[in-house]
Length: 121
Image 1 (cartoon, one colour):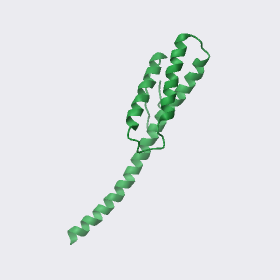
Image 2 (cartoon, helix red, strand yellow):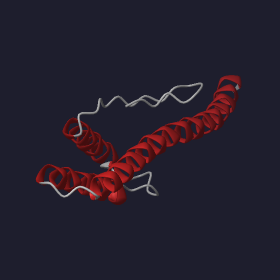
Image 3 (cartoon, helix red, strand yellow):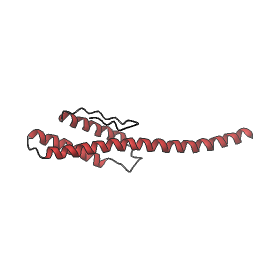
C-alpha cells in the first residue's frame, strides 16, 4: 500500500515538474528561433533596399535570391509549434541566408549570446 501511494505521489509531482520544465524549455527555444528568424528578416530587408537602387545584372540576381529568402521567412509557421517540418524549413532558411551572404561577400556567422547581443556578420 505504501509503495503504491508513494508511486502515485511521485508520479503526480514528477508530471507537474515535467510540464513546468517543458514550458520553460519551449519558451527559451522558441525565443531563440524567433531571434534568429528576425535577424534574417532584418538582414534581407536591409540588403534588399540597398540593392534595389542598383540596376546591373549581378544586383538583380542578388535581389532575386533575397526575394526568395524573404518568401521563405514569410511562409515560416511562427504560430504553429506542432508544425512537423519546422526544422527542415529552418535549415532551408539558414542555407538560403548563407547563399545570400556568399553572393554579397559577407561572412555568415549567427550566434546568440547569453549576456549581451553577439550577432555578428
